[in-house]
Image (cartoon, rainbow, N blue to C red; front, side, top):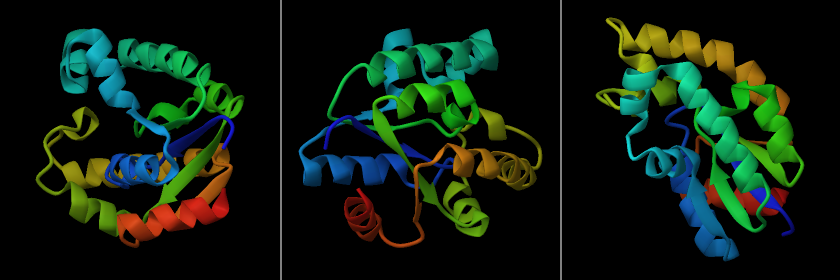
Amino acid sequence: MNGNIILCGFMGSGKSTVGALLSKKLGMSFIDLDSYIEKKEDMTVSQIFDAYGEPYFRQREREAAKELSEKNGLIIAAGGGTLVDKQNADIFRKNGKIILLDLPVEIIAERLKGDNTRPLLQREDKEKAMRELYNKRMPLYKEAADIIVDAAATPLTVCGKIINEI
């Protein structure tokens, strides 16, 4: 495939897992955008949020999107908030297909139970915060996506669906 494959979706939707599988199946390099930023900043996403705030992180995210979109043959797992910013969607779309891993909120809630690594969910009522964020972001993901894939199956099945779609 020419260009890149950008996986988007809510936190816990399987972007990193499916991205790594796609990478092996298609012989493309896999990059997790959050990990890419963490390496550049020498801090975790949570540490970046704590030290500099969300606006700083979002700026680093846009810079990383620009850098990576100039390359070819990548599978990029976008962070959960990356494609909420329409500029990032436009940047990625210039040289790739954006694929939404669509997953019901109930499955995501189950997957994220006990996960304390998500800075935007560090609140008293984590599940309520997660559901509110999900409801706010899902329409934006759908708007940004070129292809929407039901991600409620096993990662291998989701990978097969994506290969069929592209």
